[in-house]
Length: 254
Image 1 (cartoon, rainbow, N blue to C red):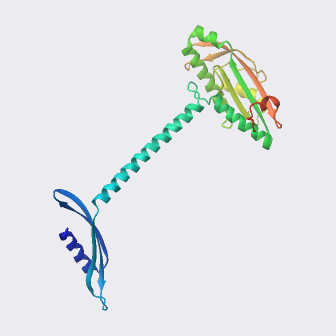
Image 2 (cartoon, one colour; image 1 turned 180 degrees about the vertical axis):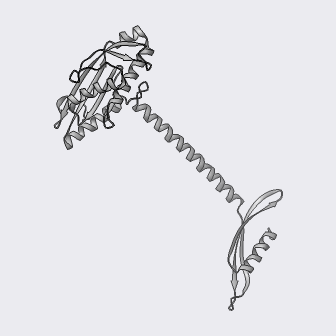
Image 3 (tube, rainbow, N blue to C red; image 1 turned 30 degrees about the vertical axis):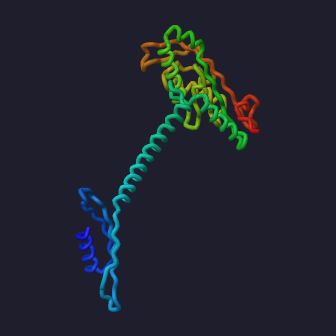
């Protein structure tokens, strides 16, 4: 310690400036850390005649700082993991696992927000509900794996046909729901037709015909297996003030 301290004192006399230096010294076989702070004293002529020095053992202080840094790193890692887990849980809570579409809860939240928007600012929206007819019998005949593929194909058809401002969700087991803001019913039906033609999943029909009887689902990217399907489609429309049917989706405010 004395050797290191003498080096810092000579440096202070040479530069005439206060100095602060840290060094390590082996003491009884262990490495200890020290910090020296030196301030020169001057006489009336400005000549340095002495140096005030404070030297302290900072080994425990450094050890504590290292422990705090490790604790902070661990905390940041835990927070990062927590945020990642929270995001995954949010996705799980609002996403249908099979189709990747928003689920019923997420759709109802979006529907409630849209109805509040219409009530406050005006406008209109269309709501489409699609149900696969006799889907239980389809699963019993072709198997649940193929039934899941049908739901995935339908979900992709509806998603590709809608706009970014629209909401598409798997509403139930074999039910899909679509919310189309600022869209009239006839345009909503055209959207359905556009979706099935764009995906190649259904043969084209007249845009004014909302019925989807005798449709054929194209699976696995080819026409090797074309299975006849039928869908029941309902289209509802509301504007300001919100109709009684749509108002049931609004949360009750005490």
